[in-house]
Length: 263
Image 1 (spheres, one colour):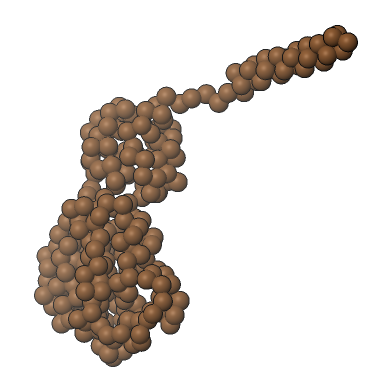
Image 2: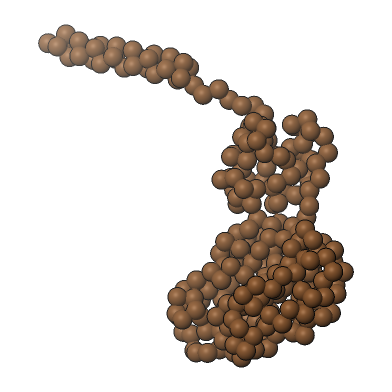
């Protein structure tokens, strides 16, 4: 009787032991080789996984740097300190990194726009946009309901008088606010003397003037004033080429709507 009980136990134990040995051998034989350089690079990255570097996250960026497919200095949240550490690990020496920050291309505050209806829905720009483009008289403008503010992990955004405002000293250019804005009003741009058109309206000048006190009307005075070909007006909206802009400020002075500022 005892053997009838002990024998199955022994058989199961032996099978378990053999299975364990097979799995242990398989884990060694089939193990993926570790890239120590990639691991070291990932260790110094901030772990934000924001995608601002152009890769899926910190592990992807670290792997690309280790393979020589990406340059150090693309991590905006990490800044110059992380760029220097990555350069040291890669043996590439000093790494230059241009400071960038989020910029809101709108000045449609409550002082400059009106509400075309009483919105009583979710306090979300994304939700409000689904209802006739939102309550603002400008269908292209900021709704001021704070989707960007809630997306920011660094306290760099506040809503002032119905308009999102960026604190560039706190902004790390991760791009989460830009991704959260349903109107695509926020862009990541270099922090330097640079002309910025603080408007995104593509309406005709007459319609823009009805919707906003300061919106771009496509008058082309800025384009005619710029000596460097840095400003073009298309679809009734001026835009600046940061590679050509010298930061002279002449376009800002020429703008009759005062919608161009120097960042």
